Image 1 (tube, one colour):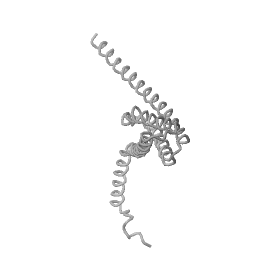
Image 2 (cartoon, helix red, strand yellow; image 1 turned 30 degrees about the vertical axis):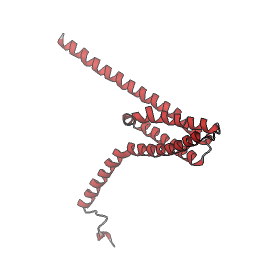
Image 3 (cartoon, helix red, strand yellow; image 1 turned 120 degrees about the horizontal axis):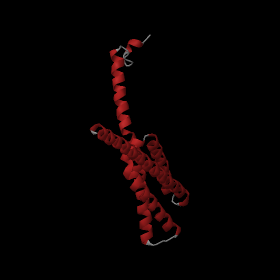
Length: 171
C-alpha cells in the first residue's frame, strides 16, 4: 500500500511538472505572438510619423524588438529575464507612439502640444537605447562564456607549444 501511494505521489509530481512546463511554453508562445503584433504596430508607426529623427528611432526600435523576439524564440529559457520587456516596455512603447501620432495628426500648435512632442521624441530615443541594451543583455552570459572558453583555448594552445604570438613560426 505504501509503495502504491509513493508511486501515485511520484506520478502526480511528474504529471504536474509536465503540465506546468506545457503552460509555461504556452505563456511564452502567447507573449511572443503578442510581441510580434506590437512590433508590427511599431513598424507601421515609422511611416506614420512626420519627424525624421523620430521615424529613424522607431525603425531602430522595430529592428531591435525583432532581434529580441528571435533570440527568445531560439532560447526560450531567456524569457524569464525578459518578462518586463514583453509585459510592460513593449505595450507602453506602443501607447506612447500612438498618442504621439494622434497629437501629430491634429496639427496642434499649442505650447503644450509642442512640449509633448519634444518630450516624446526624447523618450523614444531613450527607449531605442534601452531596447538595444536589453538585446545586448540577452547575449551577455553567452559572451562571458565564450570569452572564458577562448582564454582556456589560448592557454591550451600555449601549453601545447602552439603560441601564435610567439615568433618561433617564422620560416
